[in-house]
Length: 234
Image 1 (cartoon, one colour):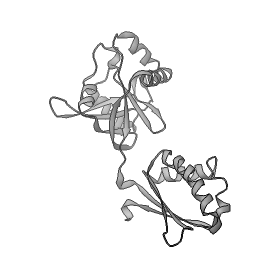
Image 2: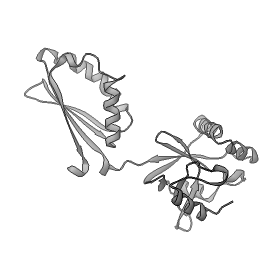
Image 3: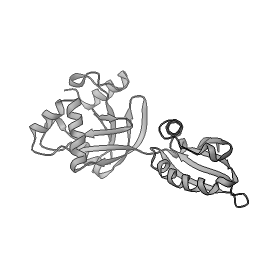
Image 4: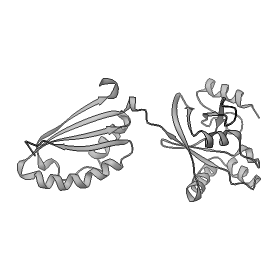
């Protein structure tokens, strides 16, 4: 089996692909700080990827002891990973119960070797999610200016009260508020914060399709005006 140092070099040479048993599979390089030594090390691991979700497994090839990097992440969960061409900050979260079992089963379905690892040991192999830390320097502010028909204000308040919950729950939303002009209740500004341009655009696509706010266009006196600012622009 190749050493972690050789696999790290291979990762960087191949653009993030594994070799050996996991030939061609994606690798993630997990930086971790020694709980005792304080020195930074790198663990090349085969993750389970589901959209933006990154999950790793402390399998250690089915050994009866957890790998050192696992203990280090538990002690210092805020770290950096390399995935493909990206390097970004994450926070490690150990999964438990049904959530842990569900993800491990999915990984075994994709990579059967992980099933063998679990069968070889009496310990429950830890499963760790690497949650990407939002870089506010890349966040996006959106101002959506709305002009309502005077007779539609009450209906618009009721409609938006329901729909704001959907927006707040949408992946990537950091903040949401509605500002109503004190002198003109038909003039609204919807303030939104998104963790990236991509998430903002995904939300717009959702609203243009299955998440369309039925009935809103009929309440408007004019088309809404959208302004978007990157934090680096402000």
